[in-house]
Image 1 (cartoon, rainbow, N blue to C red):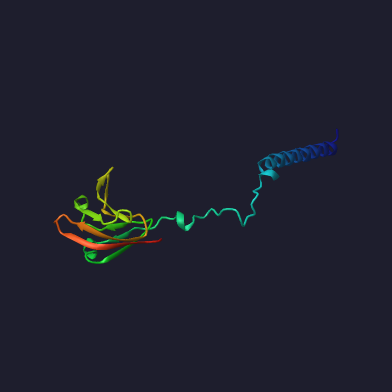
Image 2: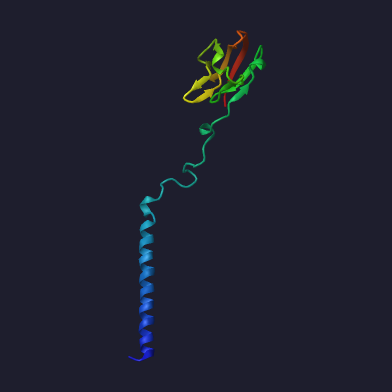
Length: 150
């Protein structure tokens, strides 16, 4: 076999090998593509969005100093909480109540599972209720708690 014919055979084999690799890769990739029956029935405009809705988002709590509540109206949104900024170390010494626990109720503070939580009020439904808060010194603060929509 002459060198030129040998070269032609090698070129043909090389092309055949490349073609085989391309065909194999194409078959493998085609196996990864979804079949026509896997396409969604709903048009893209009707498909659910991956973004969170307003209802799924968490809202920040309302943080207030107890002294700022006395005789006033505090407002808190459903889905949040009214957190009391009390001095460190006194979290468990605060007590509170509401006239209507269906609207909001007191959540005591203190240590729990290695963390320290501040006391506060948890809203349950839209409305207004009278609330009281008693500090470690025995002084009772009275205020109105208004629960509003988010």
